[in-house]
Length: 547
Ligand code: DGJ
Image 1 (tube, helix red, strand yellow):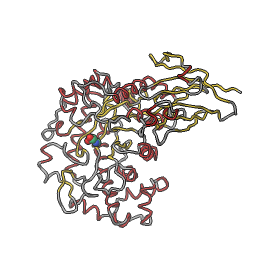
Image 2: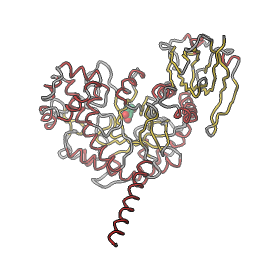
Image 3: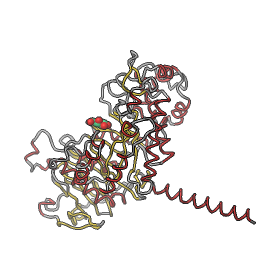
Image 4: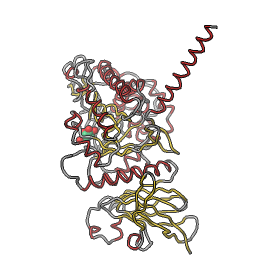
């Protein structure tokens, strides 16, 4: 009888534990889907990252951050991407100092901001400049990557267990701490293990262990992944494998051919494996989403001249095979061709998030476009705080307006996410019109300089314009953007489409508040929906047909 009672009690205990684990687990930040698009859930609700990344040294002290927090609020961010520096976290082996982490979490909460932590661990922009002094100076125990002449670089080699174990020990201590102090509130919503990983100044590490591995057979696990996913491999990678006859076994040079392209694949595999071990160990403690970022390669340059072997589009198949714990791979933008790179990063269902974009005059337009066209998880200019003590510059004012307006529209956007109801356009002098379909309508979006009324239209450079349009009912839409005009065609009948109603306004507690009823010049007497350059407009409009 007593035994039976004990068993019952144990069962109840297990049952309670099971459910509380499940419930706690279910409240953690995580990726999910709405329709066919990825979405980040934070505190159990869909969340759009209106972010900014701090300059590299800004978060190294509380004093340095004191003027930054108000600036982040002025810019209307909801999330800030902040480095956690290994050297400051673990100044002596296994002696951790979490003061900075705690201050960041505390101050972020006070300012109603979420955090994405960037782990400046083994690698930051290829180099190992953020590893603690006890790692830097003990290069016998923590070996460096070597170039092809045997010269050591200030880059930890990913081939040595001691390096991995030291980094993993620090990262897991960090994750344990975040779980302890933030497991309930979830101020920290994602992790970025390492930063812009890449080998320099040659395509691969030539340390003794790296050379040994290079001569060994390509790991079975990688071959199995490639064979199982052969149909969906990215063409740039597929062509390298194809050129050498899709060999199924052999060492790296045998399977993929001699040369630096193969050396880069090899290096990518071991960078990814190392980063995966760290990420996996962190997730076993505290499973919030994790991504890695890439320094994009300048076209025409060789691996090693650009940081070789990071999570670049032509290496993503290798990265995916070797790093299943990483949820997605992100491009950092200091290069042109924004749309081209984003198209490359959204293949194979990779969720899009832009953790870094040079903070130039284009960021507001690109934030709108990224969220409109790709329904991305979010956007984040780099060095967002710039100079927090001087007045906001025009590009900062435009970003602040963009984030404010996107924040207001976010519930509407997220309610239509992944259902082919949201479109985005990015317009400039070369690409000055764009057409897209929403429901029964074909829209033509046009840069307002095309209308020919603005004297600036004659300039060589056109300021970038952008808009996103979301359909909320058969003939009802919201428009957010600047520098764009919209015209319409009904694809289901031959009737002419007119504007039934157009309003500018904003959301207050998720309720649409009309500011102005738009007519006259503001709709070109009923011909277009439009918004001029320089300020963000949020409009609701309905269409009708006549004959
Ligand atoms: C990309 C890196 O990820 C950032 O940390 C920073 O170094 C910028 N480049 C450039 O300043």
